Image (tube, rainbow, N blue to C red; front, side, top):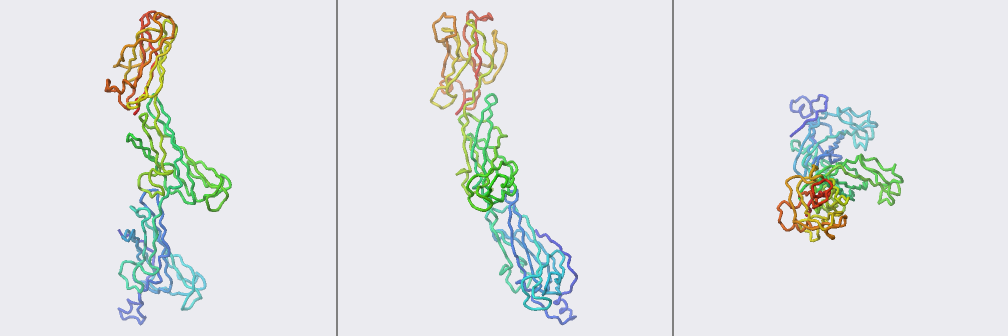
Length: 464
């Protein structure tokens, strides 16, 4: 698509037109574009991946005395034309040589200067030079792609310099957004057993190395179970220095802490180097115990990375630990004790180690069982509190340890719940499932008159 930038040009009739009309004897000028230059091209990333701004600086000298058409500036990506703009100019410049810029003709929209040397003509030892900038925004540009620009590359003019030759063209590679100095240094998971969620805290360390962090780095959290969360860290603003003598020498970057560490890796500004830190802890994920969570910085493939995805300092991994919590209230038994559940190990569908659930401070030699379900509860039950919501399931009947008939709290129940999980007897006991469990046993002297007693409860999630 062609966009036109108009610069007000003073009216003129070209010498070629005068000759065509027979109204003048001025010589016909060859339209030489050797004195029209693409002086520089600057390619800079934007906050949008794949989008770059391109600034093209164009100049011409008064040695080019006549223009019959506007100048065309065109940009290319890997040789393919992308966009173009027309720049209007004047017809005939009256002054070519100068002693100062004031002697050069004004050209609307163009900056003028008196510089270099003037090979012929009157007015001074130097030459009038005119400059302006054409700006573009290009989408879909890959990092390191070659972006070039030419002035008048359309073949409509009779040029003494071939299109794209000599100083008519310039190019630059689209910058790579290197995150080799952006480290993931820590990943911490803190479980919330009653909710099953894990709070995620990510530690990031940035050593600028003399470049600007122009985009907000992307972090991907990916679990071994397949769940994915992506979010952007706070963008750094123009982190242009990397050496320091104190923290105050380090440019501020929104959201990041600053520190001046010993040993500057290169550059000027001090004997230490600026290091930026960030702890991102506002996210929580539902994970299964035993699941691994990997945090990778910039893993989406949109940016060019100096380290391979998931390699080196681009990636850190953490293991979701078991999620087990005690809750609810046990019932006072006839020996004056309140039984409580304890555990060792972790619930798992595959681990060979047991997950032992024990009820302590119970009457010795009494029959009892563990009952469990998928939801917690807190309801009156047999003079105590029912901690497991219906429907409930029951394990096999057991007898508590200790001598029968003793009225004390020396008894205990114990069972390996992993053996039940892995037996397949209950199809609901799968990885990721939550379980509420409570101990029931007989107590003939129950103060509440129901002949039974209850422990408190455990709430846990079955891991891998």
